[in-house]
Image (cartoon, rainbow, N blue to C red; front, side):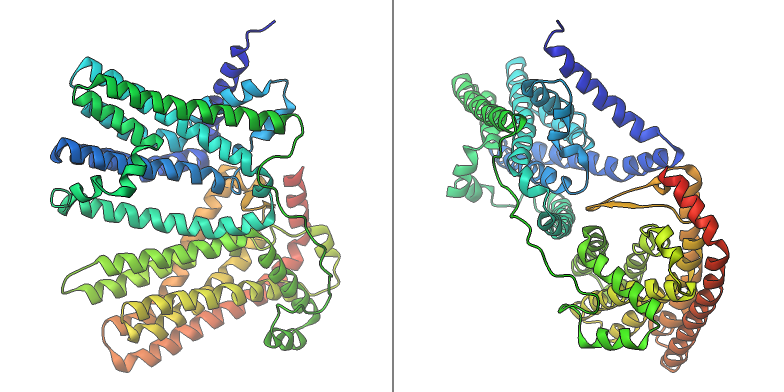
Length: 555
C-alpha cells in the first residue's frame, strides 16, 4: 500500500509540471511569460525594496508597525483573490479533484502545498526574503522570524482555500460572476492606487508620518491579535530579547493555524461526502422568453429594429442579449472603466506647470488603449457563433455583419464616450470633451472596419465559460502573429483619425478644428462603408472555408 504522502507529492509535482508547461507550451505562451516577468518582476522587486527602505530608515517599533500593516493588507488580498479567481479559472475549484482516488486529507494537503507554487505566492518571495534578512541579526531571531513568516504564509493560503470551499455553492452562480466583474474593477483600481500612493509615501513621507498614533490606536490593538499581527509581534518580541513573549505569540499563530486547518478539513470532508455546507446560490427562477423586445430595451431600440433589415435586427438583438448575459463582455467594459480610473488618478497626482498638456496627452494615449481593449471581440465576431446554423440562415451576409457591428457599437461607443467625457470634466479640460467623445466614436468605427476583414479571414472558435475564454484560436504561434498583425493594422488606420481630430485641438489651431473633425469623420465612415461592402462579399465567398476551419478547431 502506498504511503499517504506519496499522492500529495504527486499533486505538488503535477502542479509544478503543469505550471511550467503552461509557461512554455507555445511561442505565444513563452512571450506571455516574458511579459509577465517584465511587468510583475519589477513590481515584486519594488515591493521588496520598499520593505527594505521602511525597515531600515524607521525606528524599530515603527518599522514593526509598518510591517504589520503591509502583511495585513497582503493577508486580506490573498483571501479575496481566490474568490475573484474562481470566476476566472477552474484551478481554484478544489472539488475537481474528487474524481481521483484521494482522501480529503490528501486533497487538502496537496492543494495547500501546491498553492505555494502559484505565481501570486512567488510574487511575495522577494519581500519575504527581505523581511527575514532584516531580522536575522542573531540565530534565535532568524529562527523566530522564519517560523513566524512560514506559519503565517501557510495559514494565509489555508484560510483562502477554506473560504473558497465555504462559498463554492454561491461562487458557481451567475449572480456571483456578475458581481466578480465589478470586484475585479474595484480591486484592480485599488491596487493601482495603493501601489502609487505607497511609492510616493516611501519617497517623501515615511520618516515624518505619525506612527506613534497608529501604534497606540484601538484598531491597531485588534490587528495585533490577528494572524499578521501575531507574526509581527513574535518577531518584535524576539528582537527585544523577550523569547517567552515570542513563544506566546507563535503559539497564538499556531492556534489560528490549527483552527483554520480543522475548519478546512471539516468543510472538505462534508463536500467530499456529498453534503451542502456554506453559502449556496439562490435557486434560479424561470423567465418568459420573448421573440420581439424585452422590458430592458428602450423605445429607441425598438424603433431602430423596425427600420433595419430583418436579419440585421435579429442578429443585433441576439448579440445584445448575449452581451447582457455573459460576464466576459462585461469584463471588457470593466477594463475600460479601469483605464478611466487610472487616467483620473494619474492626472490628479501630476503637478507642475505643464499639468494641462500632460492631462490632454495622457488622456489621448489612454483612450487609444481603451479602444484597443475592444479588439479581442471586434476582431473575432464569428468566434462565438454556431456556424452551421448561421450559414443556413437565408440572409445576406452583409446584413449579418452589420447586425454584429451595430450590437458592438451600441454597447461600447456610449460607454467609452461617457467615460472619456467624465475624465475630461474631472480634469477641467472642457474643450476636450467633444473631441474625445468624437474620437472614441470614430475610433470604434475604424476598428470595426478592420475587424470585419480579420473576423472573416482569420476566425477561430471561442467557448465562453463565465469570464473565461477557451478555444483553439487561443493557441498556436500563427494565431498569435495574426493578433499582433491585426493590432498593428488597427493602430496604423487609427492614426489618421487621431491626427486630424486631435492635432488642431492640442496645437490650438482653432480654424482647423472643424475641418479636422469633418475630415476624420469622413475618413472613418468611408473606411467602414468600404469594409462592410467588400467584407460582406468576402464572407459569402469564404463561408464554406470558415465553416470547415472552425469545425476542425472544435474537433
